Length: 279
Image (tube, rainbow, N blue to C red; front, top):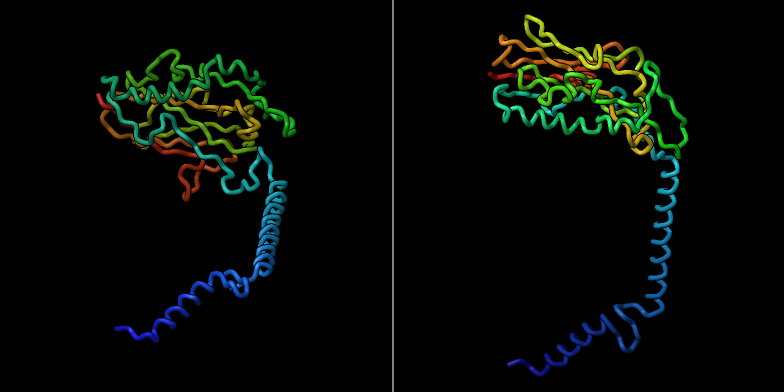
């Protein structure tokens, strides 16, 4: 049986616990008076307003140094990579079975939609051989030189809807990645080689697989909305001896100051892919 002496102690503990939240004798709430709470809340309000103001000021100053059209730092990738279409580094198909190469044909056709004559007629008919320099005004939308898919001739899909895959002489398209302000020196062109004893006959479209200077420089996605990269199509004239064999093909950008031999990045100015035609 609990002693009567424990009851006053329990009451004192309960009273002390309640007083820690609100003490009716001193008017304190959680150990502070109303004026004390007001002062500490005012201090933190001013403190955090100051921090928010400093953050907003630094962000505003930083944004003043940025250009909407040109990245602030562009020294990481000074040379463009080379990209292949269809988007595969291992092209294998049976030339006698349309289902086996339909994915490559559909990919090429979809990719070339932006190069249709109806789309490119909206762009400028630029004089070849010279850089297409434009005003650096930020408000001006940059003009784009035409690149019609008809320039790709037998690899355009206009004369052969199967891009040569049905006859075992496939086409691949090559383009360089976009780099703002890039103006390659010299006369850049694509050169492809097949790693085998006997050379494979190839056709390049446009003539000699060249990237004309009129498609440079590129001014950025926002300023150059309608820009499309120039393309080079390579048609591989494979013979029966080449069928059922995996042929490694390497394509490089030659004839300019663009790097194509960096062992740390095998896609810098070059691309290597494999092609195998089954019959």
